[in-house]
Length: 442
Image (tube, rainbow, N blue to C red; front, side):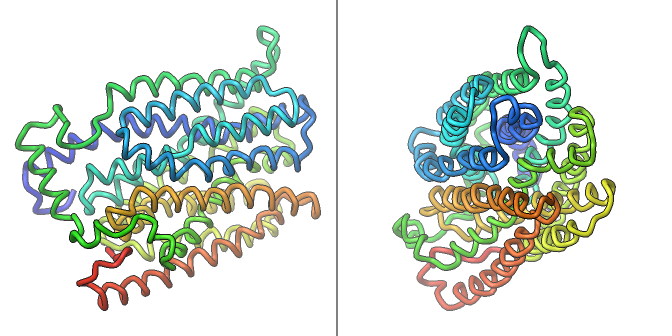
């Protein structure tokens, strides 16, 4: 907490954090588990249902195609219907679809369910980012967004050994281990979706768990950050004509691709060293455990220094270096170290980046902008690069060499952040009176 804050500010922000953050982290934890558990399931499922590596990569990537198509409409629906109802809808539907993954019979059913799962989950992450901007003054966003995003590596850290244990239930009640994996990890999301109807409050003005004085303080703090009327009146879709927006998309692509590619392929990469399914789950958890701690510390560092640009670019450069070195790693220990660095970069990126992006986006374009950045980055970073990894692996036979394309993408992502930061500062200096669509906030 910053020095010099008032007692009421300290009390309000403590209540907001404890009311919203733990519950949202748990919800997002299951979203990530249900999105990525296909990687661990593939250790048994691909052979059972007759999937080649290319078919598996294509099916896994279909999640990101439907996610891309539904993401922006979903965030707009959240604004219209309220976060409480819409987030509940998302969670209930994706939990049921994820559970149905246990009934995959072949390539067609695998493709179909992955596509539906992407549509069901679309809008959850950007919806939560947008929702938290209703409650958090800018000075708190870096650390709290990082603490929320900690669910991303934490999901794989917890689910990897859990999934390994569920795979070991192979044969229980006549079901394969991967059947148990999807059933046991899918249903909890639907129950959490029902709980959203009681746990979430749409706006601070409706928060009965805050006193009238506390609600007034929070409303004033959020109003102090409001943009001029001209900025709020800008056309929502004008953002897509802004080069800074596309720079944010490119920046997000590198981190998204790194997390998605390793989420899908890392278990098979590690198992290639001769590990059992359960051992693979344990070793797979190590990089995510380190990344969980690192991203929280990095988010606090960004807030403490009020610096976003380099706190966003440096993690991308770490991925660039680590993916380039992976091809030369001779041992499992060194591979795990480099995979850890890749995931540390992918997840440390998120808190500072979304603080940066939400500061640049005007209120009128925030719902569309946040969703569009996340959806496009997931489509290119997740959908495309998951398949690129499969193509390079099939051509070279090397899991490590297949990481090389990530080096080029993350380097471009880092350079885009540095470029658009300078561009945003120039735009702010020349058009303060006109309130540009994207305005820099360090």
